[in-house]
Image 1 (tube, helix red, strand yellow):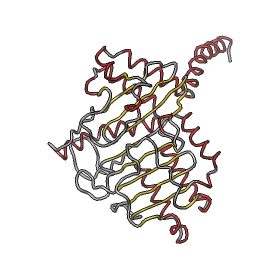
Image 2 (cartoon, helix red, strand yellow):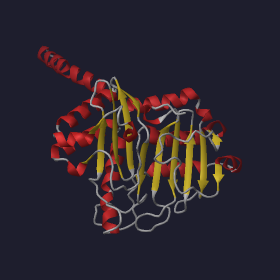
Image 3 (cartoon, helix red, strand yellow):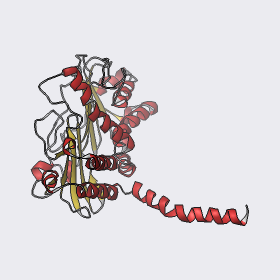
Image 4 (cartoon, one colour):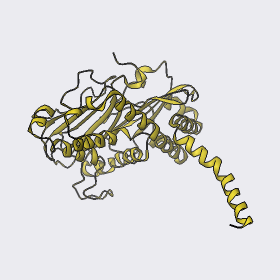
Length: 346
């Protein structure tokens, strides 16, 4: 290598090193990135918008812990519909900072599929609108403790940040109606589109890989419940885990169970998902339970639950989709068994 070439290489390294170092820091500090994105979003709001989007962390706790995924006439926070172009870009940057790229992609598609619901339903009793999603920040002390809610139909994301660290990222709720797009449409969704594919296909793979003895332990009911438990409630159910423990699965079955758990755990940035998964292993993966209820094939109501010491996953698909296809409407959630919203569970 010539002297000139070496100098050029050195110059490139000098220029790139701070960038690479900063990028690495940002990727491993989701709380700092989230705080920065929140501050940038708030800076773009006018006075009236701030009154709607900014609430007190301490004084508005009741609203901070209020969450649900059903269609509602009113929700806390500022709608995307009521933002200008720059504010919408900043809102999406905030959403992107809160999630992994996979999680962000799911959230965007959950929002956008409201257009399909509007197309098929027409003038129904619910307002279907991809811009009817609400951003609420609790406390503007982005160097201290603050909270974030991003919510609308079929989406509820909730975070608490303290001193630049995300200390709570639950409840984390995603849903899809339809689970599989089966209807021709003008909304841009190809038939066969699945927003929450692995959450369902991996679970079917696992339950159908069980032998008779394992199925007897794993299947807790022949009929699936209509809904996940404790929907909209402050804390997840504190019942003992049901179903079959991972320690009674084969290595291949455990691999599928891990993949299924990871599909939920990795919806948030890498650092947070690594913490979630490390806690599961520290508590003992063999003690994680998998429970199933309902049919073990698509198109008929089915439900599963995965529970460990630190987390709870629930999935249900019993409702028909917007076009009337049976069991094609998914609700699924990741919760913290030690307490959602950074509030200890009793």
